[in-house]
Image (tube, rainbow, N blue to C red; front, side):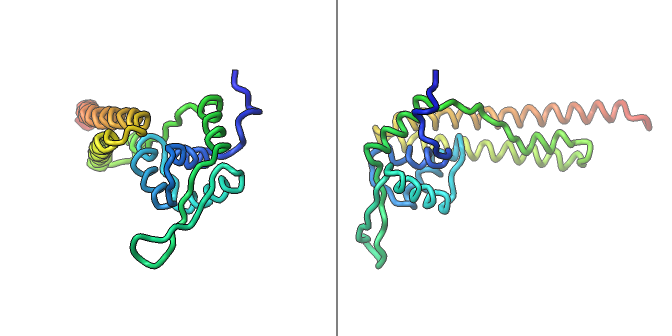
Length: 198
């Protein structure tokens, strides 16, 4: 049974940022954004820069992360880098093991539009489905490339699994869009066959 008392009360974005730091590297806000775009965004979401910096402040205040300024390799501005603390690592480990799992929430824009298909011109419905098919294939290819790149880093073994899941998910979305296009054409033929003016 989950003990809610053991799980610190932080928003999901905090746990995502702390999770990125849990791989043991010092990372800047820019690094965290880049990593989240290349992994989290493929199966959850990617926080904005402003969210990342707000969460880093929260995590420092909680004692879960520390930061320091480092001189740049090139340019004139120092860069702030962050590292997880031992209490931070313990907290994110507790959260990963014991926090209740939120079920996935499906908010599928293309399907909402198709649900309102009676308000669309047929060509627009086709465009929506074809556009979703192309988007899904683009995301699948991106996940595939990120899987290959993550293979070079042994510490990313588990993120690599989630990237593989994302690759399969977007392949399924692509195939579903293709099937929906076929279903749509079948529906249009049926509507035309049964139209009262025929």
